[in-house]
Length: 467
Image (cartoon, rainbow, N blue to C red; front, side, top):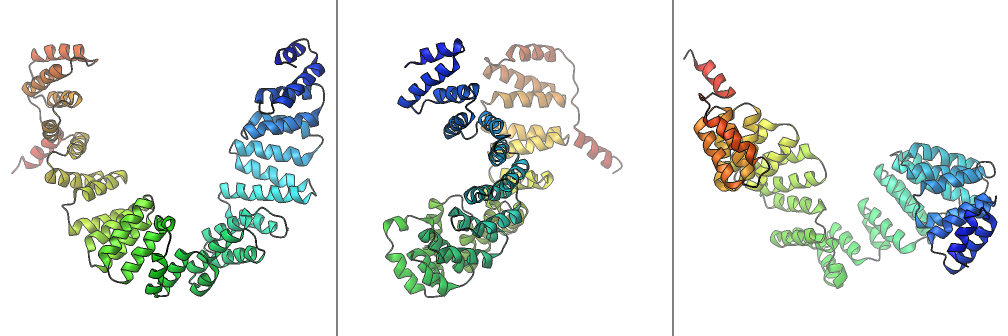
């Protein structure tokens, strides 16, 4: 028994002997993918297609995205087993993210079998493909067909409920989970999801009756305005529960009900530490600030809430409202400027970058934005003014120094251009274009040049010439 002997048999085209030798090797090591691959190939060579299929299936345990394996399985089953042929073709299309083709293949697979287990598994996969395609109605139909069978994948119920929720059919979602709960399927998981749906639907008594989770009970009690009983449950929570975002959101809600807004906001911060990506923290803070009549922070947090949720237009409106109340918050001004810039409203964005530069004269990011904008509209003199201010806070930035020199040269201010090219050569001795700039400076020093107005300056002179 040796790999070398098996290879020798293959080279001598003694395929049956090579196959037997590889089988001996496989018996002692069933995790060697290269051996399994040879077994599959040689089984095909000697016409043992079913054995080959078995080995190819084992290869998928190592890599379920191996397209070659699916193609081999399709070749094996194309004339002998239409169900397995279409299943493997569907799998191939799924791996290739060709979900429309995959869906058609899985439907054909169902049509080519009477085996209940095969039908169930295929419909379950088909439903997930429809979800990938965003065809929720078709996915719901497939999951509903599965409910007619007894032995179905446990996730069917939760997946179907989730689809109904996405379609704003919470009543249907509740019915699905009630059906699973009555059959004692995945009891704990189903029970708590069902309680959550009852709570979401305003069926507080049913939620309380169903859940066994103290945090969910506390939420129900808070919604029923029984804050003191809710607090007792929160106080009795174990350390694991107290380290969750849900716990801090409930404690914040309790303090909100009790009008202790400072503590409510502290719990919002604890919530954010547990779940930094959730928009809920900003929503909670906004509601608390509204109750405190702090309009600035309310608008600010509503803006952040909508920004996390991807509602940029609403976020911009909220930030604009906040700026009208307080236009000295640099972080807000920068956020608003960036959003306006992303939305294509550059002129409006520059107003806020300019305000940032007024509040923080040494803010390089704002100065850079303002310089770029002025250059884009042909106002080169103002561009240079902003670049000079930027240079005052970043004097070792040799790319900036070169840009200032080039900008002065553009407006034909030779002395300033020469000055900055010289500064560039002093700090950028290792730059790739050092010799090129040095030669350019030598040429510039021997060139006559009259200072030129920028485009904006020309326009202003034109409009004022008759005054």
